[in-house]
Length: 235
Image (cartoon, rainbow, N blue to C red; front, side, top):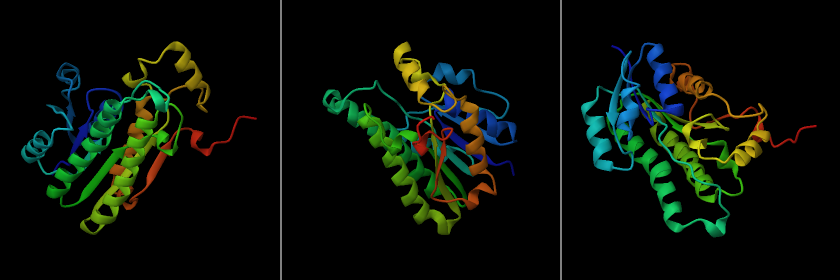
């Protein structure tokens, strides 16, 4: 039977790249996203679109119920935000970040785990989970995703479900389109590669964790950031 994967945030960026990578390997893929217009460009060649708000528990449950049995779930849906000092972050922005980045990941993982017999859940975190100034709400949400990943890995391992996270560095996605040229240049200088990496790089990491060999990895965070997380300044 053809394996089936559900990828959220699948209309663009990392999610789209993951959906296309798995489809190219022969997977049947459902790409879920809030952006119905963008989903239209992804449909085809093994990828079926589904309009979904990951923070809507009922909608997530309904989608999972009508899909074929899931072998892999990839939680790519997420939001970023303008870099702001702690004193300027509105409570509403903090709560929205948690609702989407953490809540959406939790809801889909919960609904998928209820129906999966074996397989893999792969969560997209961020190198930012290690800390960083100017994005306390984003950092908190991604650190929480890492904690959730480890908790689920412990709970689900006896059912043959691996749970891991991929933590990208700076990636060329729509999330960074709103950065000012000055901000983009400043952040790019901190990247060992000199700038953002293509989403396909993250898709390769996800494809490994989705594979039979990759499922022997469990409860881990795979940092894909060119070594930025090592914290060693250039010579």
